[in-house]
Image (cartoon, rainbow, N blue to C red; front, top):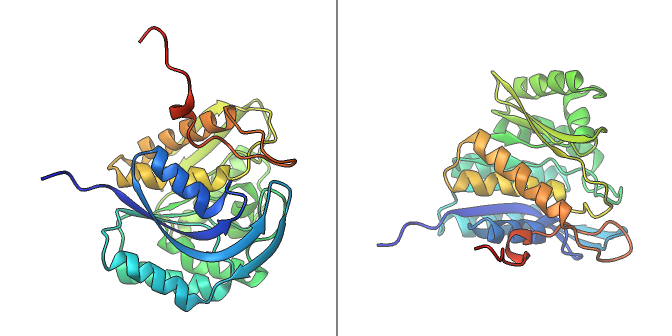
Length: 272
């Protein structure tokens, strides 16, 4: 009898440009060897330059998608991304309680790389009240951590204080992503309630970073689904995204996407 295939459920919005959202999540799952399933929360019309339209789906169809998957397919980890509205946040939080998945990675998506808002202002409060306490891993970027922790973050010491606040709100572990900070090294900061661990990679000067936040959270979920521990999952996600940025794709006239399949697309080593 073959081993069970690790499966991850992404609950997120659709990106018509393919660089972020559900599309990026599915590419990440495929690249990291897990089976991806989806529950779409919103449809966006976007490219590398802007989000031109957003339609949030009715919470009942979001929940119907979740229940259809979870009632038939074992979900080893779930990842949430763009939830768009308070009603969807509430519905997804209730679904998480109902299905009790072993890992829930929450990417509290608020603004696209282009600067367009992807979460209604009232939903930010709901995100803090309902999704943060249900996160086994909360993965905000700097602006998202500032909004959820309700404090400015200008230094790594501030980031540690914000992580402590978010842990106090109920998240079991927090990874504050380092993309919005400055300096030669990009540092992702992990806090598990006891220890801080920094994961550093060289900062790559490129505009092709669309979807890296979605991808990072999805990579953590994929590694957790495969049975890796928290530290190994964050370390693996950091390395995977760094490589994807380094091999970023010059697609479109704005912020292009990372290459999700960079490990598969490199020419073979002639020495092997």
